[in-house]
Image 1 (cartoon, rainbow, N blue to C red):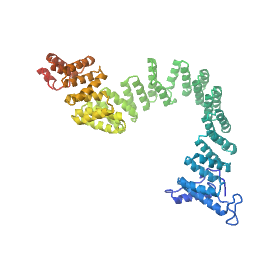
Image 2: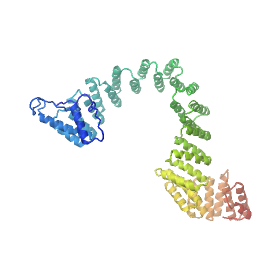
Image 3: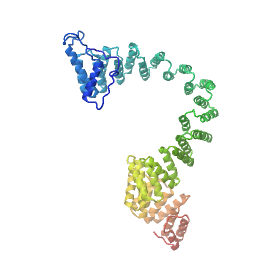
Image 4: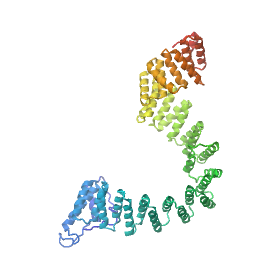
Length: 601
């Protein structure tokens, strides 16, 4: 019996097209082909003469050899079917018949690897390699076992042995080098790369790996020589000059970086990559204006990568900038959209920048321009909607939210914006439909779910569906029992209905304690007290609200008048009602109160 797996990787030279599903007959046929083609080579050593002749090497009869091959074929069949338990059983039977067969040891090791039994795999992988030391795949399997066992030293030794013993396997020095780096055996890794370079020639990836190692070792002069070697090998590639300059800058070798780049600029005067590195040198050495001039220049170049331009601008986000720096980065962002007018991301970036500088109206315009080119930017949509809702541009909110929902029907936040805008326009029926849809989409986000419930509490209250309103408020408070917005609105609406006043009092007082200067919350608290008949306390709190409210609302003044009337000060009550009317208070009874000098509720 042949004990060697042939040089090609198992099944590597056999091309068999099988139509339909891979049934057992297909598998048997495939394994038969593998056996006949010697993959793996459990080929028959046909002996002339008697059918039951004895192999002088193994002592096996022809019958034994046939039985071994039969077991091997069955093992291969179940291996292909991924039934590794049966496969292993057959391979072990084959091994019992022929203990010195490298191919059988190889297959058994493969199965143990798949079962993560690496100690057992190691035994058979070593045997396969020792029995057939000229087969590279046995070395690769053994190295794989050692790697899985985290024995990287042994794995690297196997790769070194492979390269030494089998010609044409020098590519595996890359694996050995990687393992040396992982073990921090940097000199060994460098030795591997030197040998690779001797065989395959100078290559940028090899040089870069060597440079990274030399930097870790603090051997900057040697790192520089490697970079210079790459530049000399490829004189027409300015990127290699820029890369070396970048490494010099990172290691504060500014003078050498400047000399290198000054020479490169003579050869490549308009190359944006070289110019960018020169700007970086100037920036690092305090030559800010020179750096800015170069950056501004290369932002006008189509050859300078757009993504790189955007990264430069984005690098200013989150930093404290003076007015000069703000103007500079705005100019850069402006150049992006000037020289790349069809790039949606450029407008979106400009919008982000303007938003960070609180130029919200201009930011919105940039977002809309970005969305006109590419409407698939969800963040741009939400930024637009947030601005419009904060500025009470309700029709725009509704229009843009509907457009965004068409594109992103599963984004709950979009339903929040449109639902809230509709609620503020008193279209509460449609608002509840959108808010309920958003709520369904928020089931996995409890915080957002709470926000939807808070809004639904307001909308259902406006529709006088008080049971649904209370349920929504309670659900919101289940998640966030300290929500000032929900506590305030819930308590206020209960006071208007004169229901659950003790609960309303508890909630309103909690909010006021946390926000003693908020006029809206003080007004709510005063109104709860009013409806509980606590007019003196109500007066104290409504007057605090008036003191704090620089842009006082007609509702607060009307409430003040109502409280004063209950306290018997009719003249002052009428005065406050008249003030409320001048502020266009939303009240059906204000005229009747003033005319009759009487409180109507």
